[in-house]
Length: 80
Image (cartoon, rainbow, N blue to C red; front, top):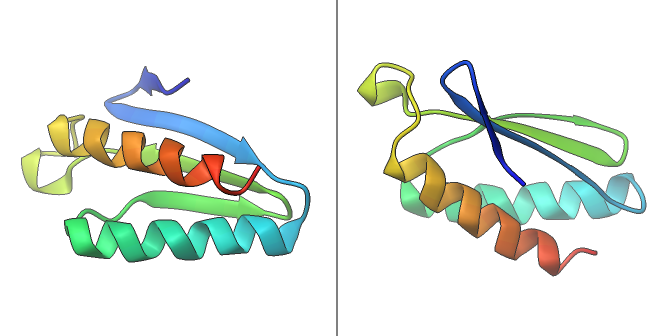
């Protein structure tokens, strides 16, 4: 479940290994580019962590962030 903290939506995803986590990130990158909404994220081995907010709106959580979060959740289903 996504949490709203400090004007960001945050969530981490764990996968079986680094290659799976990286494949997930690649899939998210393609969709994020099409949405023109690029996440703040990090990857350590099998874990990918997101911090979403909308820079153009003053670094607050907007509908764009909720839409991207929903897409990220859908993509993650294909990698577990």
